[in-house]
Structure formats: structure tokens, C-alpha cells
Amino acid sequence: MREAVLRFAVAVVLLGAILLFVDLRKVADAVLSISPLACAVCAATLLLQTSVAAVRWRFVSVANRAPMPLSASVRIFMIGQFFGQFLPSSIGGDAIRMVLVRRFAASVAGAIGLVVSDRLVALVTAVLLITFVSPLTLSVAVPDGQWVARIGALLLLFYAGLGVAVAFGGRVLNLLDRWTRLRPVVAILRDLLALGRHRLAPLIFGLSLVVHALMVGAIGVAAWGLAIPITWLQLAAVGPWIVLCAMLPISFGSWGVREASMIIGLGLVGVGVEQALAASLTVAAGQVAVALIGMVLWLAMGAPKASAAAEPAAHQS
Image (cartoon, rainbow, N blue to C red):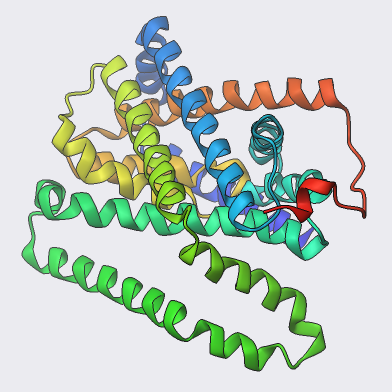
């Protein structure tokens, strides 16, 4: 409960701070000026993004030795999106996914591992996308050479830590496995390490890059629908950073964090505060529309029981 209150407070503080610096009339005029076609294309892009993410999760489940049928992964992922939008932070949606995917996992730790693995794949590939585009685009948004060097140093530090985890993680986990209370956590971490070495890893990470690229595309559609003068190069420079920041589970349904990251990111390429906020609200409306599909699926399937017995598929690889 305390964490939920804190996340709600973060959303309120960020949105309140944003409202101090914007002209709400200009924001409303901008939102009302966007064409229905642009809204529909933005929502369709977000629906495609969610579908690809669900397919990625299906392959994560195969790599984690708890394969789900594609229909189940899409349905559960969409339901998680619904609860992620209307419960405090994305953690609420992840908790629902853990409960619903329990039927395919051999244990509770396995169900948790399926969701945690998917989240970490999304995080790593967001940084990977930034790494791919930064050499060509970063100077567009951050012309200061010192900042470029600092960002490069942060990326190198991230990959160094990732490399150490892959190289020595197994030995550390063997030591931690001696403590009985830590064994469920160790099992989850072992699944994460195994995922990176699995034959499906290139496909999983490739799909995740597509997921992030579609999110950047949705931001671009919202911007162009609002007649915001932004080029593909500028969008490629700031879009992946906006996606990475919006993934932080520190607010209610990403509200406030998404808007602040859009305002700062688009502001780096000369977009006004009101226009950036209008673009963020357009993307948010598309995400809510996609989440409502998850609500329909939830009502259609009911609340399945978190059976302690895994289905036979959970024992096949």
C-alpha cells in the first residue's frame, strides 16, 4: 500500500509541476486539432507494438522451459496491459501476469521469472536501441561534446556490468544457492542467465527492438498528427530515451513520467512544452484504448485460478 501511495504521489507531483509551466488552453487546442486518422494510426501502432511484445513474451516462455501457446501469451499480456494502466505503475499489470501465467509454469518462482525475464529483456534492448542510434543521432539533440562523452561512458558502464553478470553470474548464484531462503530468487536469476545463451535469444532481442521502434513510431505519428515539425533523425535521437524513461516503474500507470520524458526529450529538438504535452496525451490515449482491449479479454475469460499444478506444456521445452 505504501508503494502504491508513493507512486501515485510521484504521478501527482510530476503532473502538477508540468501544469505550472504549460498553457492548458494551448494544449487543449492542440489535442482537439489532431485528425481522427492520426489518432487511429497512433492507436493501431500501439496495438501492433503490444502484439509484438506478447509474441516476444511467448518466446521468452519457451526459452524459460514453460512454453505458452501464442493465443495465451497474447491474451495474458493484453490483460496485463489493462491492469498496468489502471493500477499503480506497471507492477500491477506484472502481478496479474504472474498469476495468470502460473498455469504454464512449474512453480511460483517460474511464473515470476517469466515476467521478470521479459521486463529485463525490454530494459536491455531499450539501452541497446539507444546504443545503435546514438552515434548517428545524439549530436542532433545534444550538441555539447562533453554530454556526448558522458552518455557514452554511461553506456559503456552498463555493458561492462552486463558482461560481468553474464561471465561470473553462474558462480555467484552457486554460492547464493547455499542459502535456502534465496533459492527461489536464485532460480529466477538462473533463468535470466540461461535466456541470454538460448538459441532463441537473437529472435527475442530482435522482437524487443521492434517493440521499442514501434513505440518511437507511435510518438512520431502523434507528433506529425499535431503538425509538430520534427524529422526522422530528431525522433530517432530522442525517441529511444523517452521510451527508456517511460519504462521506469515509479508512477501510477506511467502518468507524469511519460509526460515529463516527452517534454524534456522533444524539447531537446526544439518542440514547445504545450506541443510535447499534447503529443504525450495522444500517445497515452492510444495506450488506454489498447488497454481496454485487455479489459474485454479479462471479462471474456473471467478470473482463472492460479492452479498449483502446471499444465503438461510446462514440462516440455
